[in-house]
Length: 342
Image 1: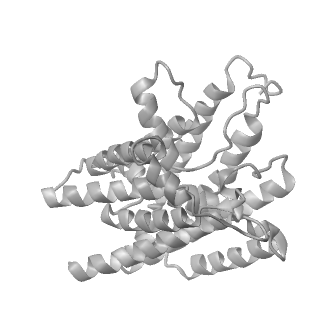
Image 2: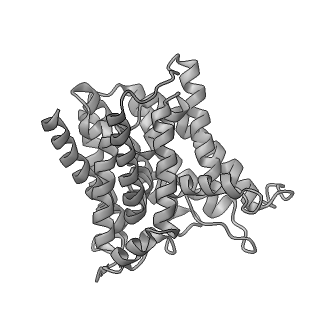
């Protein structure tokens, strides 16, 4: 920051601005491409295929960008929670399954609901309030003992907590996973513009790492190393909203604010803004249940479909890969039950 001549604000204050910019870009791209993992699982026909293509293209660019960054930039993720030696395997699997079930019940994961809030969806807004409260309770409140207990069942990989340390190394697994994602994207029925939007969205992940891990680096006032995620930022936003006079805003607060603003701007310009609310008490109960499950699940799994999925998998973290797989399984099982009961 001193090199750039920006020394009149603290790194924390700068991180809010950076998060706001990153969130704004995510909101615009997510609203434009309808980026949503739930649609890729439980969508119908063309909608599901297109959503899979966009999601695969985003994860592909996130993976390649993150691994390129780690290989050639002065940045290390060794201390990040994704790469801890002891993997809380029971918590991750349980959390992933719960999150997958929850995102089907609410018709969108946390990132999608944040975008929908900007487009005028009051259902999404209320679910996010419930999500933030229960996620905070799971992190530091009455549900914390459950989190600690489930987290005590851990597994230590004899090779390493990341595929980077496995036989074959970084580029073997990056190449294999990248080829699989490329195949999914090419076989999808998504438009080229949507796939391009997915690629740009995925590149926000390494940009986030670069910003918090290098651009805003201050050895005397260090910031947490972060990129795109929604579970922790929503809890930070809720806590900051209640005690802002004592707790300063950080990257997460800026990120959520930017996503809502980006989605709102895009929805207005594209004529997609529309006020929406609940249609029945039963629908309200369904959404509240889904939001609660995602809150507990997101904390246990170490993140949501974006935090553990799009961002975590790009680091080749075994914990993140396991979390995303559990979310997919939970989502597919709930989608099948939902179809049978309707």
